Structures are given as structure tokens and as C-alpha cells.
Image 1 (cartoon, rainbow, N blue to C red):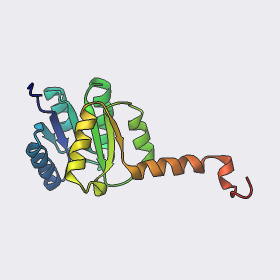
Image 2: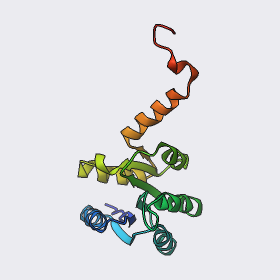
Image 3: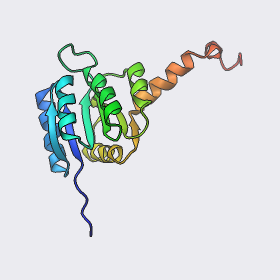
Image 4: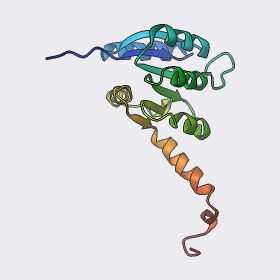
Length: 161
């Protein structure tokens, strides 16, 4: 039996307890955590140094708590297109998520609050690392809703159709 090398991961999260908990979880399930970061510039530096298989990053990180994680994800996708990326967020951000998801394969966007099953989360990470794209169902609902709001006929009732 051929044993596969573990998925090499970087975790970028400014909340130290969440970051350490995620690292512990990944270690427990056989991932190799090769680096960690608490802001966008540190994330880019450690990615360039270690060239991981997968990056798990929060969208909002210091110094502005804007979209530093998302901005770093864009740079990572441009410089290392084979690196899988999972973006975690506390909020649905349709515009930024749509932009990120245009990147194609090996990409994911999940809401932190919806991660309730460890086994499913670990499976999601493995699928993303193997090339799948994963989108939080809440985001999908928002995307569909936003698309419908932009249609001129969306203001008509079913009877008016």
C-alpha cells in the first residue's frame, strides 16, 4: 500500500485561540501544518517560503480588519495557481466571494458559524486540496437572491407573469 504524503497547510487567522484550535485539529487528522500567520503580509511571506498545498485564511485580518486575508488569497492564486485556498468568514460577503470563486478549482468559501461537524470540515479541506470548489450554502442562497433582484421581471408576481 502506497502511503500518500500529508496535505501541507498554512493557517492564517488573527484570533489566536481559533488559529491554535484549527492547527490542533489539522494535526489530529494528519495534515502537516507548515506555517501560520496572523495578518496578510505574514501569510504571503510564509506561503512564498513554504509553498503549501492548502491555505486556510480568514477574510478579515489586521492591520485594518478589512479584507487582508482575501487580498492575500488573490495574490496567492496569481503567484501559486496550484495552491488550494479555503477562505473562512464570519459574514456573507457576496461581492468578494464571487470574485474569489472566479478563480476556479481548489477554492472554497465557508462561514465560520456553519462549521458544525468536524468530519465534514476535514472532508471539505481534503476535497479542496484535491481540486474541488466548495461554497457555503448560505452564500449560494445570497448569490441566487442577488441575481434575482437584478432581473427586471423579478418585481412581477407569479400571477403577473
